[in-house]
Length: 401
Image 1 (cartoon, rainbow, N blue to C red):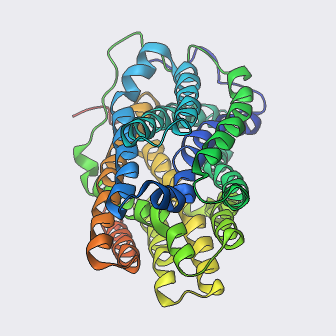
Image 2 (cartoon, rainbow, N blue to C red):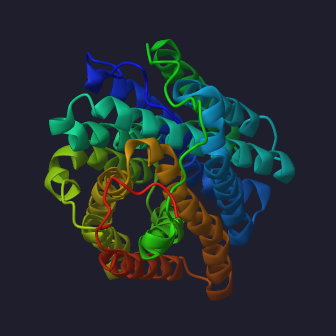
Image 3 (tube, rainbow, N blue to C red):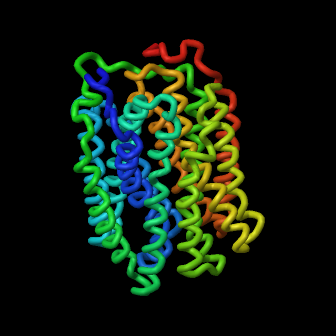
């Protein structure tokens, strides 16, 4: 894999990375997480169990895993910018498909497609953002944080729309929400399609450089546990808020707090993300994430739920950024797309297993509080695992093993 022939791009890196962040805004912030907002209405209207509801996020995560597995090959073949654009278009198409039918198979395919597209968009977008950030090495971590805070805008956008659409149109209007999300993302994708990214970035002219996995197995295990733990919280927390008596306004406020917290991420975690000490940055942020996931267990009050949303959100968005920082610190630039893909695969396996397993436990035990217990415990164990990852002795010189 070769680097671009010229710096990519020399002017306005923050503006270009903000445009790039539209990819995870659409694929993750809306494509994946808006499902949690319509899940209660879909479950009631379509007669789903918690296991069936969880399966929809499992199939989404399976698509995400598949996307992560093929992302590097697609990048090598078509380049970073093409991969970002086409995969994000697939996410928009999947949202329209979600609105067309209540058929379980069709909805499952739509969730699979948005997962596939979101992963490819995320891996290629993150690698392109890392390349752009290199033009300002003194601000690289801050610039990357702008990309990873992107899904927060998607969460806020969907949180301001979905609960009130459901309230206005009444029970059974989940499909109207999906049409609203389709319209929103169709508008959002326009700047991404028009932005002047280097079309040759990431195209290989030689054998692709492989990512050395063995030295970072403990780190990958921690990231796997993050994938398994966070998705239980993000899948079922809106249902938890509703079961606690929260109406449309409460659900919207809770969801928007998670999303808004992303916007302080670049400033709050800048120093932590700059630590080149193995997995310690990830361990710190993941530990805070576990605390946020566990706070609702102390009470259903507005204060506890608001604190949970803020603490979880402000760490959730930074956590993904910490893995890219780890790859940047420990591997050479040619390996970054493969490295980010490897991290995304570990994450994808975790989030594939998480929703259905937690949904089954909830069905068996009869309470969503068990889902939160599992989520918080899994995240805490992941933080401990990441803390054991040491800085690689051959930092920036590792290519394969």
